[in-house]
Length: 287
Image (tube, rainbow, N blue to C red; front, side, top):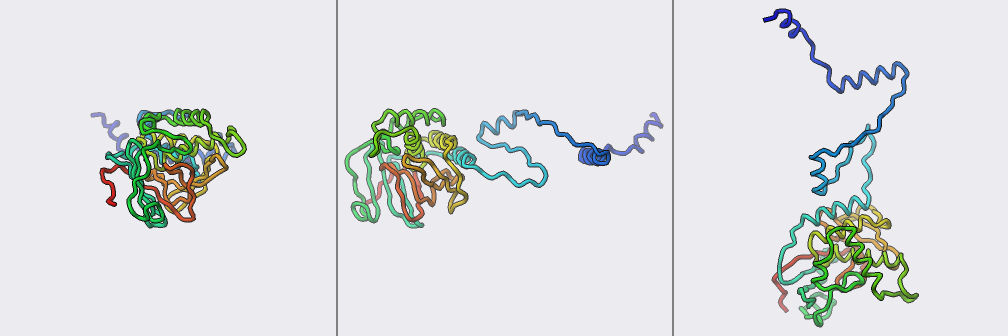
């Protein structure tokens, strides 16, 4: 064995840590009066990061110093809701069941069969709390648009393609106001109403509901108005101006909102807080 080599090994000090080196370098630059220049970071998407993006996760670069965390935007909220919607199992059943709860009290229930036949039950509705078969089978109202169940299931699951499909349908329709045909802004607003219907009540697949959230996230007029009981309050452009809807990104549901777009058409406004729950079921309530 080389005795000198062994002695040098025993007496050697460990190399300083990278943090220590960086701190010493900064102290040296400060003492020399030199300005510190930062190079622009070059981001490389590593395989792990690519997989996270593909799974719908958002990768945020670390903050420098004690800078406050970035404020969430409407886009961030809706993209989280899209990820949640895509991962939520659809379930199965004969009836698409919608429950409307107002201020914590069940207000109305709706059951829709795939052919468009519907039943309603609720205080203040036709039947006064008893189950009522409502008319004949009819298309579903998706905002201002009428669609059969088959048409709903054929909607694209890409946000941009979905918006284009709905916007084209609105433009090709005979929708009008008292002032005449819709202008471009009103057509955009009517399309947003259809998107809100898809995330509120429509019996679409999880992939299409996620696409509707992504399409909403891309709309320039959608704004985050801050926390609300049960989610985040969002301002959305509609055909006659703007409206507000509360979305819970953790459940991808419309919760504690004063406005939503039901399958009966139009926009519903209420003076209380309404939560919309949907599910497939084989059970139709007893009369």
